[in-house]
Amino acid sequence: MTFVENRAVISGVGQSAIGRKLGRSGWDLGVEAALNAIADAGLTPDDIDGVASYPGPVGAEGGFVGATTHDIRNALGLKSSWYTSGVETAGQIGTLLDACAMVASGRATHVLAFRSVWESTAQAAMGRAKAITGHMTRASGHTAWRLPFGAASAANWIGMYAQRYMHEHGLTREQMGNVAINARRNAALNPNAIFTAPMTMEDYLGARMISWPFGLFDCDIPADGATAIIISRREATAGLRRPPLTIESAGSAMYERHSWDQRNDLTTMAAHDVARAMWAGTSLTAADVDFATLYDGFTYLTLQWIDAFGFAEHGKAGVFMEDLDRFSKDGDFPINTHGGQLSGGRLHGYGFVHEACVQLWGDAGERQITKDVEVAAVGVGGGPEAGCMLLRREG
Image (tube, rainbow, N blue to C red; front, side, top):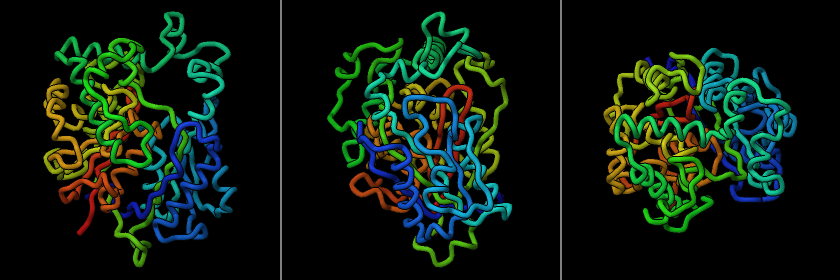
């Protein structure tokens, strides 16, 4: 049986304008994306009876929280039978998966799930370092053990994971560089991408170091933008403008401690837990996937998802990425056709779901995958939290 017994489907998607320093609030961008997604599904705001967002009203500076569930509810005048938001969730799409469960259970019929950020505009004045630590009054939790050593960023923490994979399995910087080069090449076909200028391996290796082994082009790009997804009850999609996309399976499991450094195998992450759970919920296998949108907050995270989903043998993700021709829109296994977060801009997990949907519907324009595609794998998150989905086009 498919995820939530095949009752919840994706009926529409939408995005706002995307860019650097747009000078617009996250609230404004969130409303634009929401209205675009509702229209894309052939609905009106009066049809929406559920709202879900990530991360909710958390204490974060630097534009990380563009708009909350209630911001968009109030702006659109939505009457909600169910709503939620939250941070402690499956790799930024946990609330979207919660929406699927609520639709499947009958609590809601059409749920607007969204993510809004305005990090580029918000950080223009304060700088990235202030954005990371500005809301802290005293280091606590895992940061209490990292900040005294200058490890304030995920670039430091995930960089150590990458070093372990390099040590155990021979991963090279050139192999990570292929992730960045693939993203940049694909972004050139995306009119909404932030960076589209060609990148060579020489460019990648020559960029300034951020936190070994990550250089500048291993790190994603703060952006302004919002993404919205409409989750609908299957029987309520008759007569809508699009054929619904089936959520074949999903993963939100956590089999080990919620920790950045206490996994039994430090060459794996939570991605491996959720991928295992996803594959347990379907008869499809990695060989059935036509393309993938894989989280790339850092280049290494894309390799983790390749490893976790089983697209490559464990430890061989770097070798898998060596044939770059495979991963373009014309290749046999396209990856991050929109440019990901490395070149398209950091819209977090919802951006990867959006790209998978527009590709499955054949609406990606110049970057549309050449071959006919029916099954997409979406992997979101890095470190101790992750979430994934297997989407299927019917007919």
